Length: 266
Image (cartoon, rainbow, N blue to C red; front, side):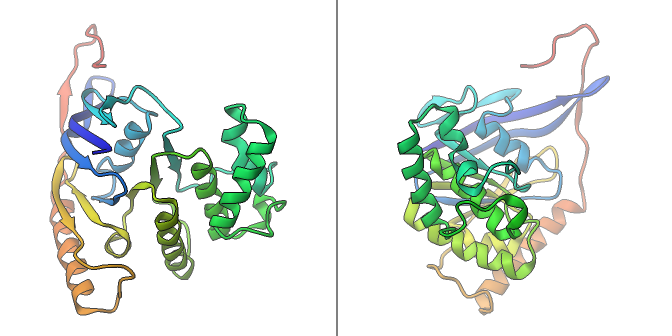
């Protein structure tokens, strides 16, 4: 077990109450798995990913990474955002090397690592290009390479293809599966697309409406590559969409009173 989420609750303070985003959420993820997280918009998927990344803290419960509590960000967890989040003044190579520079990795080792992941994500020949000259798909390849360059155990992906057109998105999904099979990383992938989740995942984690908890887990029974036009694929997609629509039809806002003088939950 590489990741274990136990009774996770996250509340955000407002003026007079705490808004509960995630409540008593439990999930175990095995090493090497490709897990997609689906749920209604605003249910807390990105919040969950940020807590795993160490960019946010739970109100209660815990997340164990390789048996140890997550206390903050670390190079063992790489994050790929929906926004490309590239430095416009840095070339493809320099963007990929950024995390290594922060860790003061020697220049020669940085260069070798960048070369490796430039090759892996299919950007050879674009090492000196700047983000403004790249397509959306190419920018996201840089983001993936930058995350992988730190050699994380887990790759956390927050709707990384959400801003791409349909054709580019489908191509990037195929590329991601190729990269995942070669890099052999655990992937936790947040998406709003049921089609994308069924195409990519070993397991799909369904979250309820806010406050989000675990609605269910769907294990995909088919090997890759998967045929989107198949009857089985279409039926599973339809079943998952029906479950999500039931969640969207009833989205309560759960809050807890907070005394003005009382300390916020930590």
